[in-house]
Length: 505
Image (tube, rainbow, N blue to C red; front, side, top):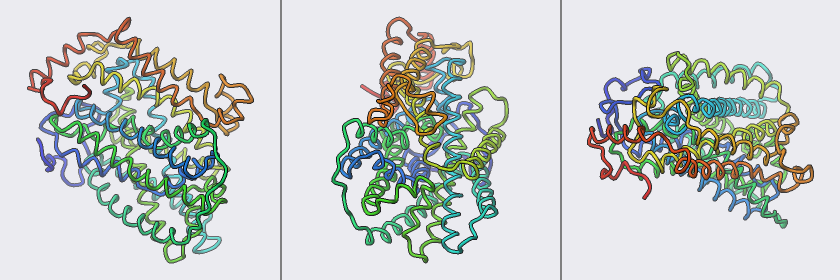
């Protein structure tokens, strides 16, 4: 099925039946431009403004921070688009397709890490919504933002997130379209309200090259790189003949444009209010309401809640698919429910226990970012080198299939990259910091090199390079896997001359 009209089974508020199984041709629908809505909805929030504040906080001046943000966002979101291309080609969620590179059992390690990443991100989204609610309500009515309000707002945000994720793909795609429009309009109004009051006073200091690299790494890890492990989850329902360029372009534009604009605004906001960074460390979104007029507080809060729920839904939906890809034998809605419980537990810690949001958040970003960078490099390298003719449906679902139980080239490359990457990143969190940065001297850990967290970029380069070399020389993937895939596509008329399905030269 092609065009914009969905299959009748997916119309209305109906719970999605599909889990990690292959999407047959008769259930595929839509066009690449539809991908704008889930990705823009998930990334259009006030949180990227805080990212901009964090980048400046590394010690960069305004123009260096802008360069770091532009490179970090500009490089990372096309990676999500490439993974989305694989989703249409393979008709399965991201971490199911990953079995082709890692093997059926070998894929469980990166899938487990991906699962933790998604549960962490959905927890962060819900937490930010609750913290912002407390700040705004306290401004409206001093002393009212106590534990009862936190619990009530937490229940509303978490409940709405779980409900939408349970309904699944079709409902998420339609709801996120309207959320994107509403949040986009309110965000523009927020910028209009704030910009006239800014007194831009750029810093005279200049950060080092190492600090600039740190800013790029932070921008990439906090934005596109954190979405690569679910890039195929929202493109797998598109028809096979959908344009690869369209899928890549609409995914990258939808996901990358909002955070790019908002992070740039965060840089300007920091220059106009040098004390903002301290407030953002405690409440990344609520702190942005401090300079708002009272009449705009309620619209601001509603915008925050919508955007945080939209981002959490995308993560929660994908984390449920990840849990199924790990081999947990439950239905997709039940998997979402399990993840929702973990989200509530994690949010409870961040809201009621953690004294500072920034330290645990940065620790989470850097640690998980190394693993996700390693996985993404291997997945994309495998896509270019070995999956130009697509994926085998049967091989993805069976440990005895063409992709095998383990792919040593991917597993060894992944482990080497993670070990190298974790040894080159640091964390201000006291507990996490003790097990990171073991390749750095104490002086380097506390200096500009330690602040760069360059281990994320190093892990990406090592993983991709090692897998490319190993998989084309001493540890090539099973040729039967590629033969099976080619035969499958020839049978369906999807041979190599069908340009939209091909990627690369």
